Amino acid sequence: MKILLYNPDNGVTRNFMPHLWMFLLQALTPPGHEVLLVDGNANPMDEAGIAQFVRDNNIGLVGIGAMTRMIAKAYRMADAVRATGVPVVMGGPHVTEMADEALGRDGGPRHADAVALGEADATWPRIVEDAARGELQDIYAPVDAFGQESKPSLKEYPVIPWESIDLKQFNLVPKAATALLQKIGEGWGSFRIIPVESGRGCPYGCEFCTVTGFFGDAIRFRTNESVVNELLLLKSRARSEKGQMAVFFIDDNFAINIKRTKSLLRAIIAAKAQVHWVAQISANLLRDEELVDLIAASGGKWIFIGMESIDPANLKDVNKGFNKPGEYAAVLERLAQRNVYAITSFIFGMDNDTVGVAERTLGQVRTWPPGLPIFGLLTPLPATPLYNRLETAGRLTRPKHWQEFIPFAMAHTPLRMTIEEAHAEVNHGWAEAYSPEALAAAVESLNDQPLGYRINIFLARLCFRGIYFPMLGKMAWVKVIAQNRRTIFKLIREGFKAGAWRGAPARIPASPVPPVEGVEANVQVVGG
Ligand code: B12
Ligand code: SF4
Image 1 (cartoon, helix red, strand yellow):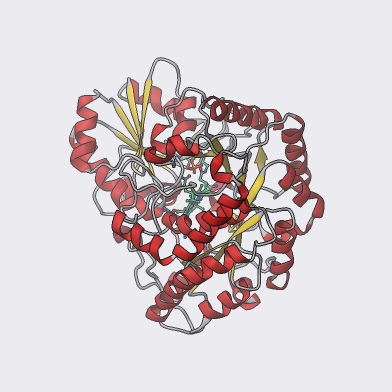
Image 2 (cartoon, protein in one colour):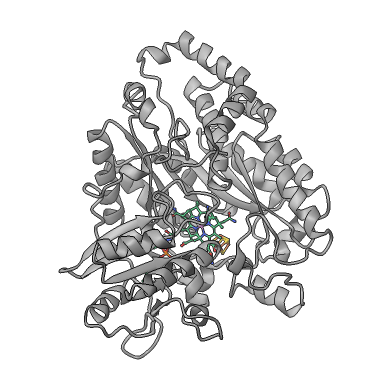
């Protein structure tokens, strides 16, 4: 049987890296079936397009995975597939919590023939065999022989054949720049960010987060050996292509067990398996100097920190009191001393937020080492404690907000400001943090560092917003470049002085975004 795994785009932004679930399920598919992957972020498709694809390729089963924000599109695509007579199985965080919605048991239309609840590592092979026999069940739950929920241990992790997977669509370097960039340092002819997981689960239970509910508070890890081998595979592919392969460790809290993280990082160093990597780690775990040393030595370049708020009352409200705003600066300094920088994530619209929260937050951000601040709105995702609290309090203004996804729009009333004021705060945060003046200041603050670091922070700031905002057209890029011309000329001038543009080995540290922003239709990182 031919199987299509499809991940929808959300119609607004595109992601900068492929989705791990597709490669994982492909690797877990029993022999005798062929699996095709279509990531809507790289290969946008509409309803007619997917129906045609299914017919042209004689597909026998379609698997669709989606976050809440792309679920409306996922349902539309599922409907189009089912109209061709091909069954659809859906999985991922949204349908796990809203299986009745996907199966049409809540009074709405049915979108899926089957739903895979939770982690599907163990159920996927069964789903495939049932579909091949024409005996799909409605619900597949990961349970053991006694009917108890069971989670994969990750000790037996499948080998994802990265050496042979077609990754052309995820190259973030525009074709026009490839020849030039191949000559820089070890080669930047291609640049891809690959998702790798080293473990699952986070016990912290922040009120707005789906992770503790979905993956459980039982934390599970892959073996060091299996992670190291995966990195070696990626490294060798990058070398053979004269390009770069950076890794996003997608674990929700990469250092949740510090002892084990240190042991993994030591194993990476010992095996010379270092690649540039990004990971999510909560601020409280970055107090450990030895951990930070190992992060830097093993290739860590960017750490995503869910700071959420600079107001301890807000943090307490959302059960994230373990974040201590008073230590944010020290944590960031500790990282910056090792040339590791942070993606600092903030949420506005929290219950104690008032007008001016963005400026107050930016006031702090400006005193920290340069990084990539990001701003979102508190969002009640289904089945989170936050959703239940707001629903009980009658504060949800759009209880089924996912049926009509609107980017950066609140779905409940904040307590101390209006919805419109919250929207204005988030807009202010983005506009100020990524203004030409802010970009220039970020570059300036690294004046004592090698040129590569300044180029890195500049390009990262220039491109990073693309993960959250619609792709820029060519003209918009021209405008952004014109606005930032002073900083660009300054960096180019310094580059000439340093000989970087004449093939000197000017090492550019890995960026979470491409070295040059793609403007071609098939380049998938989006412009900010
Ligand atoms: C990496 C990641 C991202 C990446 C992008 C995704 C990518 N390209 O990989 C980035 C950093 C850009 C990102 C951004 C956002 N993310 Co995110 N992200 C993750 C993260 C950390 C890892 C995803 C992953 O690969 N997991 C590992 C795989 C193996 O797990 P999985 O995807 O769940 O797949 C398993 C099962 O769900 C199931 N499954 C999944 N799909 C399918 C399909 C079929 C057919 C079947 C049978 C089974 C199945 O099988 C898999 C194996 O067991 C998750 C948290 C997490 N740990 O999962 C959050 C998560 C998915 N993100 C989340 C959110 C909210 C966001 C943002 C909206 C945050 C924001 N406010 O800006 C943005 C959206 C950006 C955008 N443009 O869409 C939420 C989604 C919750 C929800 N209900 O939708 C999560 C769960 C985190 C959370 N805090 O709750 N994210
Ligand atoms: S620390 Fe991060 S992953 Fe863990 S529950 Fe909180 S927000 Fe979710």
